[in-house]
Length: 200
Ligand code: ADP
Ligand code: 5GP
Image 1 (cartoon, rainbow, N blue to C red):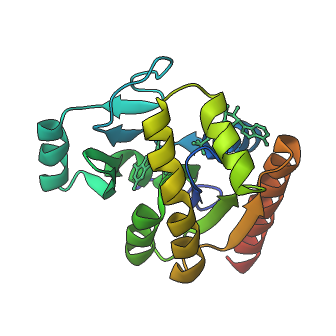
Image 2: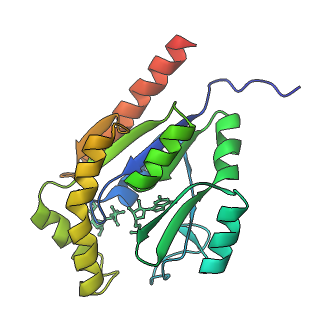
């Protein structure tokens, strides 16, 4: 029989409006806490700098539909019209079985689905210091054209309201200074891991 891991795994969800800095924060937290980043499947076009199998698994709609219908996705959402994203189920289950910290960077609709399936998640929502700063960051990364940036920006407010009302998020943090935001998430997750360990 397999031995129990030294500590139980934990599923950490990090969400926030596009451009707020959650990918940057997620990878810093992953490094600091030796976590595992969940590589999502997506039908969104691959942008310059996107690494296949590292940032995302880029697939066409038929492959996405196949995975979804085969129940290979823990959750999924059409985040923008024509752009679906989903979390492959197996790596999450494996990481948790091995007692690891599994990190999902997903939207609010996806987080709601995961919360319904697994009650024991820890979820952090990242807020921008202001609307102006959010728009600035979306533009700064030079990944999308202006029309796409505007679509992403206009979704931000409703995403924030939904996050505040859905009851899924344990913590809300503001990403003003990046170093401080990373430190805050690391601190919150570490405290949660200790609380869980003490309850075992
Ligand atoms: P998201 O994953 O939320 O869409 P990114 O992590 O891609 O956002 O960050 C968007 C841009 O903002 C990137 O250019 C990133 O380097 C920058 N950024 C992230 N956090 C900060 C911060 N605290 N201050 C200034 N720029 C930031
Ligand atoms: P981007 O295209 O900027 O990488 O991501 C756009 C949005 O999709 C972000 O809000 C991000 O959190 C969300 N997202 C990324 N992967 C997943 C996923 O697997 N499932 C869901 N529901 N959302 C995701």
